[in-house]
Length: 261
Image (cartoon, rainbow, N blue to C red):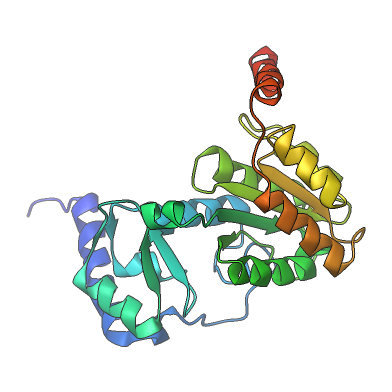
């Protein structure tokens, strides 16, 4: 009797499970037990790194199968790479659960922004309000956690946001914690990230125009809800400056090459 190829067996199990979940519809995506503290309000995984990987997979697979919809909430949106192929089972599951399948080019051409959002326990409540506002403005937010107010470590969530922006999976990022300082320090350790802690609309406009900031860090305990939302709106609406600003930011980027290995 010949040995079983693990890769072939895994592929077979994936196809069988995909068909079963497609037949069951949205019931197949319901959690079976209360979720522990961790990352993402809607995602199942309790670790930030896994949620970032799940976001990339859900938004970028060239072949979209039923499993790729498992982490997308009912009525949500899955942004596809141009030319992505959606399997019939996945298309049926998307229709049944009201999930919109949108090609990335459509998002870009419309002026909508893909925004990665992450928060520790101190920014959890503000994050929920912010996600609603981003959707109201017509943008496409990705919630990278945390899922409740149990204590977690802000560098994990700031890193998840920064990685999403640096990899091109998101256009901009927003990280929230109690003061907005620690998240900026953490995110700025990643190559290609320019994270700025902003406390009002003027600092947000300056961060975008003068410093070409691509991650906004906010102190949920330092700002009122109105101040926080106003700061976010200005940050998203301000265009990065050119000429002298870009030249100076290029010097910031050059500093990354001087980091000790």
